[in-house]
Structures are given as structure tokens and as C-alpha cells.
Image (cartoon, rainbow, N blue to C red):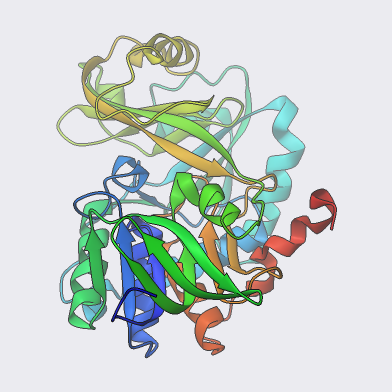
Length: 378
């Protein structure tokens, strides 16, 4: 095949999920692992443009299962990686209007049932925790005190470092161009440089995951949407402390940082590209949302920002695991902007599928592409 190197697994993408998959595969005993990455180093795609929250407060049981496993694993970060996890517990509030009341009460019940410390706040209680929030049109707040700010860079660097220690080969500035398939089985990956024979391919290509799957004639029901983050400062002390707050109706949110700084985020923009700086075209929309939900924040002084891609599935769950059409192809995609917080679970589930060894206790069948079979006409 034009290469002297043979891999047990080739991971396409060195974003957070690709890094976690390769590290967890090596941890599980897989010996020859190659990671292909178009960029010159890890995390230069959307993983490096993340709001970087670690959250238990997710909207359904499968996501909460991912969160609880990942949260627990992160709490052992120092034992696993030899350094203290950069973590600041901020808490998180979903600000819920009346028309979404039933949905979020159901979510609250699921969270409590699964052991998430979730509580319903009155509008007045929300104002106590987040004094800059406009609450007169809100029904209640859904609050989890354990949700926390983490460092995406630290986590990606730890996976990369430990992966190298375990023998993972990271191939930067090298991108996959196709899959070699014989008798419905993966036997190799072609790149801009060579062909690598292999037994498994992990599709952790983020915004390009649908393209990678198409090389195997597999259709992924993924929509790429842009989300923009803005960093700023404000003199309004109401936004110098308190939890992260999201307007549940429009997915606009803010999070106080340190020293008067604030992060503001929003966006489900279709057919858009990432930006290395703040997305100035979208900024007026973000400020208009702030004027409604947190008026004192509407004129924050912009200091930076970026935009990344959220790859969303119809049910907002990631696609993890093998496909029926091609043996050896494992997906880890459609993370919807939650790849950082769920990276321990995602990487471990990939390792489970490759090694056929249960590790994390999560029902991995819930995330298979097959759940969309009826929509795909199969």
C-alpha cells in the first residue's frame, strides 16, 4: 500500500475528542496508534474556541451519564496526569421563560433522579445569585452549583503529552484524503503523504466528520453551526461575580471571569466559518440579546473573542461507535460544542468499541448512528 508503517488504529483529528480517543486507546493497550491532523498542533479547530465548562446539568439521561463519568474522571485529573486540574466552580443557571417551563421541570426531575445537585430557583433567588439578570419575564431558574470553568488547553495538552508517553504517533500537517476499504472492511487510510494500513479508523474530524464518513458511503445527520464567544470587561459590578447564566429561549449566555472580565456567547449560525478573532458581524445580535436579559452588560468593552463550529445531530446526542456498512470505522462526532466536558467519556467509549472491553458503565448503544436508521431510509 505504499507504506512500511501499519497501525492498529488511525484517529482522524487532533481536537479534544481525537486526543482523548488516542490516549484512551493507548491506555487500553492498543499498541500502534496514528493521529492525523491537518494543522501544525492540536486543538487549532473548534476545540481551541470553546467556552470550556464542565457541567453535570445536561438535558437528558444519556448526556448526564456522559457528564457524570467525565466529571468523576476529571476529579482524578492529578492522579492521572500529574498536575492539578485548573477548575473554578461557578455554578450554572438556565433562565427559563414560561413557554419552556414544562420541558425544564422534566429536565430537573431527570437530573435529580440521576444524582445531579439540581434546584429550582424563583426569579428573586436568581437575582440574588446573578444580580444583573432581568427576571421579570422568567418562570424560574434551573441551577447546578457544581458546574465549573475548566481549561481546554490544559486538558488537550495533558492528553497529547500522555499519549506520546504511551507511544501514540501524532502526524501534524498531514490530513486524511480517503479510506481504503476491501470487502466492507477498513484496511487503510490515505493522506496527502502516504497510505497507512490499519484495522480501525476513528472519525474524530469535528466539522469535517460528515465528509470523512462519506468516504465510506456513510451519511451522518450532522449540521454544522457557528457559535461565537466574546471576551470583554465591564464596570458594572453585578457581572463581576456569580454563576454562568444562559437564557434558555435563545442560547445566549454570560459568565463572569476574574478582575471585571466577562465571557459572552451565543449563536446557531448555519453555513459559517470559524474566526480567530471576535465575530464582529454577529456582535450587534449578541448585544441586543444582552439588552433584554442583562441590560447592564449590553455595552461591555470588547477585548477579544473567536468563533467555532458546533456539529449538531437531530437529537443533540453525539454519534459514537461503529457503523453497519463498514467494519472498522468508528465515529466520535456530533458533539454539539460539548466535546471538552465530555472528552473522558468520548475517548473511553471509543476504546470500548475498539477493544470490546467495557470500561465506563455507560450504555454505549445509545450513541450509535443506527438510531437514525429510519431517517436514513435503511
